[in-house]
Image (tube, rainbow, N blue to C red):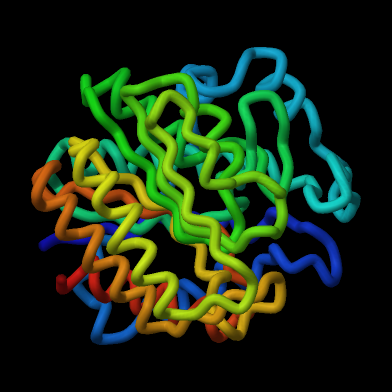
Length: 309
């Protein structure tokens, strides 16, 4: 099994200001954890910038133009909302985050990698078709899914999301299209307030809301009983993972109680379904995770399973 790690140093130049949880140290800790002998077999690749054509498959022209027009002077910041900040380096970082996800799809479809981990920032799963929010500018996973359909003719693409926060952006983009599938486990109630079990799109959305304080038992049971069977029925030809690690018990932004081992467990389960329906093709994109040590350990556990099974 060949696994590619796609990243770019420009993603460190997205400066969200002092004290912001979505900071460059997140990516530094993840990349440091993926060094060493255990990860020597990773194919290490540089994320390209997404093209306008790729962005426009998800976001309308006015939205793309508006985001790309914001380039604060070096050292300055521009707040899109209370949580979502742009700096001088944010546009390149956002383009490489979306472009890295697109490159991940190309890698698995071309066959030079079987699985991919895209370690970039800013994250993407809160960015709706018409609105940036929740630290996110472009909907990276959704852009990758649409690219798989447009370039590679993939008929059924699934995005699964185990970030502690519901991926309202991905759901917003997918909800009316039965060729796309979205499954999410997340704390509820919690930011952004979406993700109830009754939100089903056209039958292609499956949410697993977990109450604050839920731990490994509820997480694993919910995936085994609800999300994985629904994903199996959809039978995706390509599986994209919104890999947020903020459901870890050490994370400061929510109150789920997962352990590092739970992220390895769900990665194995997802690989099994990717093997069954999609030739093992799986593209994982980094989303949340705000305790630096827990994030690094959890991402390493995730990638270790992608690399070695």
